[in-house]
Amino acid sequence: MAFIDANRDELGVEPICAALQVAPSTYYAAKTRAPSSRSSRDQVLRPVLRQLWEDNYCVYGARKLWNATRRAGWDVGRDQVTRLMRAEQIEGVRRSKRVLTTRADPVAVRHPDLVRRDFTATAPNRLWVTDLTYVPTWAGVAYVCFIVDVYSRMIVGWRAAPHMRTEMVLDAIEMARWSRGARLDGLTCHSDAGSQFTSIRYGERLAEIGAVPSIGTVADSYDNALAETVNGYYKTELIRGPARTGPWRTIEDVELATLGWVHWHNTQRLHGYLGDIPPAEFETAFYATHRTDQSLVEIP
Image (cartoon, rainbow, N blue to C red; front, side, top):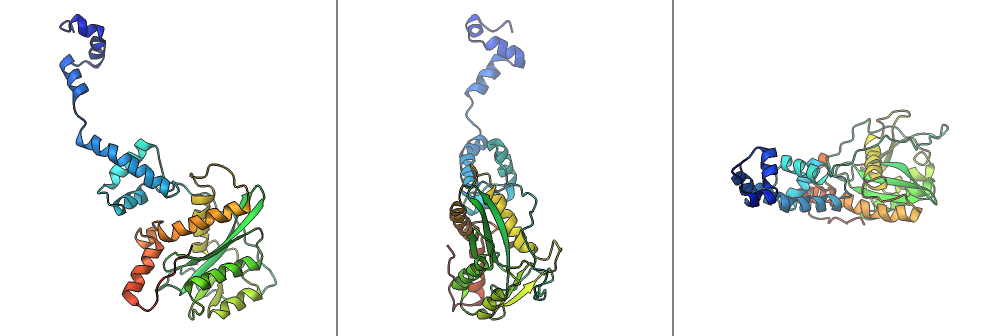
């Protein structure tokens, strides 16, 4: 490096070039070179990806974030999204183990299992599944009940309460009836063998809307798998999700947050089972193809 003059040596160039084993001209060319097109595009996409990730409860992994980015109008590859997620140090959320909340009534007469693990439907309002879960708070335990339409994965009814009595399940049915219609003949509503779902009032309320109850087998981890799956990612995405900054203080806080999460789940969350589109969009496509005499009602 004897050909480097004294002025350059004062700037510290000679030690750098010696360490890198490059000529000074190469060093200065690299310092003054304009950013590559890839680097420039990365600088544009990185804040876009982070914003989309944060707007979706910070739960999307590479596949869903890639689909969300393309739906937002960006022409981007999945591998590029994966690379930029690493650069931004963001990642998808991982689910934890399931906790049992069912309390079966050993003396109650149970409805037959009409589903037999076949969680498929050919149209909305043919098969619903329902289950309970719980959320610890500083003010006590919040119990949450969801009713899910199997065809579209739409949450059609839900209720959060400080107890797990039958009333909360009936309230969820009332919400579902308000959003889906007063009479739903041909509907099957499947649940586990919890005492709320074997009660007489539960069966009577379903009969009022033309629905038939179905109860899965006891001590079977797959008897109500779809409803338990929804409970699982509700806990993962909202209750213990990466966007959550601290413990839940009150049951009212859980109820308000669940309201926003259900709206996101139905209208924005990308579901792999549906081809990475939201339930509301999936149902809109169904009704556009099969019927025109009934408009959809958005669930808040």
